[in-house]
Length: 540
Image (cartoon, rainbow, N blue to C red):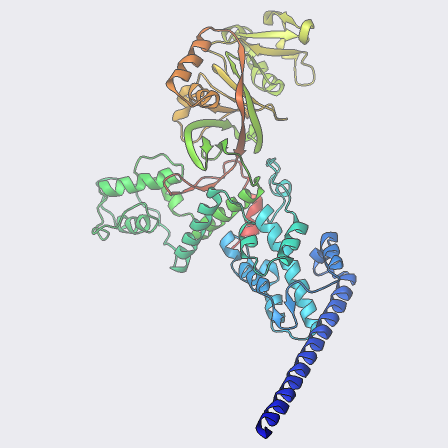
C-alpha cells in the first residue's frame, strides 16, 4: 500500500510539473506572438521607404486583416513555407533572375533571429521578397512599355492578394511558387538551355577564333581542330574519334550547317566571315540573350489557346500550334527596319479571296509619288486605280491628269487601290484580324524573296509563303480536299470573304533565342534592335 501511495504522489507531482511547463510555454508563445504582432503593426505603420512593397495597400490590408500575425514564423521558429520561399529565392537564377534582387542577403542575416522584434523584421523582409519575386517571375522584371515600345502583348496582372491568402493557408508553398513562371513548354525549354549554357560557362566557356581563312571541305588548318571541339561542345558535332585531325571533312561540313541553321545563317557548311562572327559571340552574351527571351515570355499571357498562330519575326517563321506542338510551319516575310512589324496579338476570324489592296497613305507618298513623277503610267502597269473621295462619293481619276511633282504628304487628296489578280501585292488570300496597326497576313506574287535568309522586305504586314495551305488549316484540317476548294474559289477571280468557323488567336512575337522542335538551341540577330534596352537588366 505504501508503495502505491508513493507512486501516486510521484505521478501527481510529474503531472503538475508538466502542466506548469506547458503553461509557461503557452504563456511564452502567447507573449512572443503578441509582441511580434505589435512590432509588425508598428513597422508597417512607420512606412518603411527601403521596402516599397510593404507600402502597397494590398500588403498593408493583408496584415491588418490578420491582426498583424506573422506569416512566416511562430514562437518555435520558421515555418515550412519560409524555407520554401528561401529556396525559391536562392534558385531565382534558374529563372534567369538575380537572387540578390530579392533581399536574400538581408533575409540570411535575420534568419536566425529569435527575438520577437527581429522575427517581425524578418517576416516583413520575406513578404517583401515574395512580392518582388512573384511579380518578377510572373509578369517580368521590367515593364514592356518601358523596355520595348513596339511590344503590345499584355499578360494579366498577378493576383498578389490571392497569392498572400494562399500562402497563409498552406504549410508548404512549393507548388504555389512553381506555378508563378510561364507554363508554356517554350519557356521551360529555354530554362533548361539556360542551365546548359551556364554549365558551359562553369567549364571555362570557349575560345574565340582568331582571324583566319575560310574553312571548308578539304581545307587543312590548325583552326579545324578548334572548330571540331567547339561544335562538339554545343552538340552540333557528335562525339567522334577524329577530333584532333586538322582536315575539314564531310562530317564537319554537316556540323557547320547545323550551327548555321541554329543561328539563322546561310547553311553552306563553310566558315566564312558571318559564321566566324557567330562563333565568336561571347558565351556571356548568349546567356544574356536566353534570359532576355525568358523575360519576353513573362510578358506573354499565361493562356495562349489550345490552337493558335505564332509568328516569330527574327526566325521569319509562322507556326500553327496545337497542344504545345507545331502542326504547320512556313516561312514569312516581315517589315523592313524602317517599317518594323510591332509585337501584338489578335484573333483571325475572316479571310478574303482575291483581295483588293488599298495602298497605305505613307507608302503612296514615299514610294509611289517619286516614281509617278517620271512615269505616270506606272499605276496602269500594276493594275492600280487612283481615286478621290470615299464611299459612294469616290471618283476614279486618270493618273495622266495629275501633276505628281506638286504633291506631298501634306497635300495629297487621292488614294490608290490595286485590283485583284496575279500582280496584287497581297497575293490571292488575305487573313484579317483586328488591330490598330493595319497589319494582316497575306500572300505575295514575289515568291523568290522566300529564298533569302533574312526576310525584312514588307511594309509591316506579314507575307506568308503558302496562304492556300494556311487557309486550309484555319478553315478545316488542312486536307487536300480543302485546298482544292480554296483554289476553286480563287480561280473564280471575284473578291469574296469567308468567316472562319472558329476564330484563331495570333501572336506576332520577337524571339531572338528559342528552342526548336528537335531540341536545338536557336539564336538570331537582333534585327530591330529590341534587345538593347534589356541588356542591362540581365548582366551576368
